[in-house]
Image 1: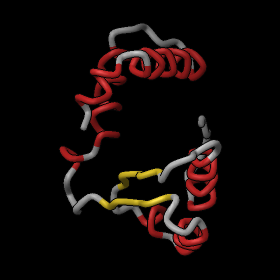
Image 2 (image 1 turned 180 degrees about the vertical axis):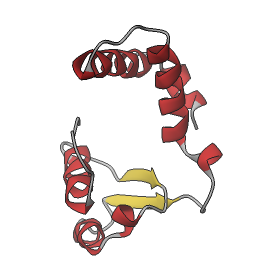
Image 3 (image 1 turned 90 degrees about the vertical axis):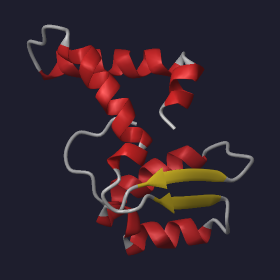
Length: 112
């Protein structure tokens, strides 16, 4: 899911809804302590799924435990090696790096 602009609880809820499409087993999402992850709107949505979606919260100040931080560090290293002229170029390079990661299960596992 690509979203331009500020991410708030409604956007995060939409992201979670998209994760649940076609899910046949429980989905576990690891999140940090950001307020949107704990917002009432998000809690209500998660609760409405009766255990089909579980959010696990990282301890405060633990970026080393957050797989997202590892992914973005990798993407940043890849993109920073390229010449970027505009926002669309940056977006294209970042998406390319993310898609390459998707095709490398061992790399994905290494982030956890």
